Length: 419
Image (cartoon, rainbow, N blue to C red; front, side, top):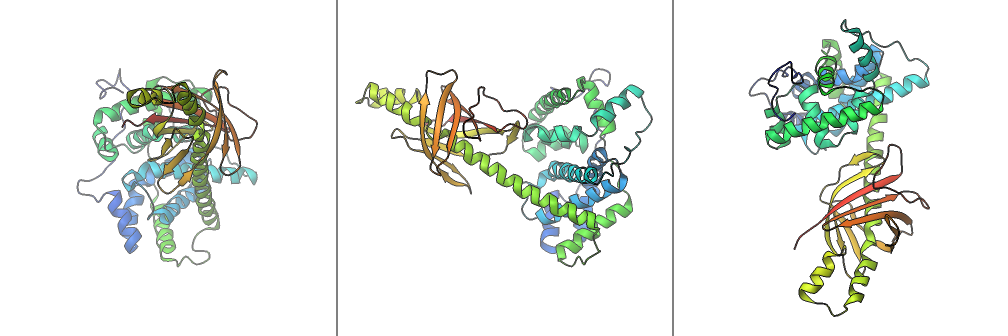
């Protein structure tokens, strides 16, 4: 979406803005009040603000109303446990969307294991063709939305699923309105591509209509909201006695918290892996460059370094198994004596040695990590851009610079830092 919709006949429909009175406390303030003072009113405000979107996600994935309500409560109990550690509380909505989908997916798997999958919730009256498309999409929409890179996922969730204006989205993301419009357009395109691979080919207008009309926030029953708030307060105070929280909700909460912890470990492992893959890429290149003219100095030495990967690189992006992984402030330093170090806040340093085969297409590299592992990969260097793709498994080498759903491949993109 390159500009604000000019006509409902030519542009995708816009969601109705979510009610949000001027002067209402921001999510960051409400979370802080609940985390520090167990302020029930603050948590209640968060449930009122984000509950409709959370319930909508749970209902789309679960065909049983009671299971959806259990997932709803478990989602907010996960928030209780994570209230102090959220990195960007102002983006609580997109974070809750991801947790709600994770929780509902876990509940659905449990229901299938118990062979108690119930008939899907009846859709409202409407165009029969649209209803068929919706029945096919409703269980995969949030899954595919969650697979998008965060820079596309967050604007889509905030704009379509929470009804915020583009100005409000820009304020929350800290970027110009034009950037929001661009990311909404690109995000829709990527979401359409992902849904098409699941068998649902949609136009931009049809996808926007589904997001606005079918994925609109669901009204939260008062009793459900009150139950979630009560459970949250008891959990935060550490006074939730046996039976105070339904066993299904408690089990869901525990399972989701554990899976989130394991996911964090997986992301960390992916970063360490890609660091190890890139570890040796400089050694042979640097030595070859130095062997050409061992006495090269000044501008000649700088030119040689530009032709190799010697220098300091910033990790721009990491993709693992078809999914974008978030990496912040990670850097790789390649030196002419064959030493390579990955530095990332809170993740320490990793290193190793490598061998290159420039004759192969694509060029191949083999890494021997300091931990004793061996990783096989491919790489390409284009000026100040370095791309590496490697497999987690010994003996398997990727053949292309891409990862696929369920694969063990990791794709790392780096940018050379200028002096």
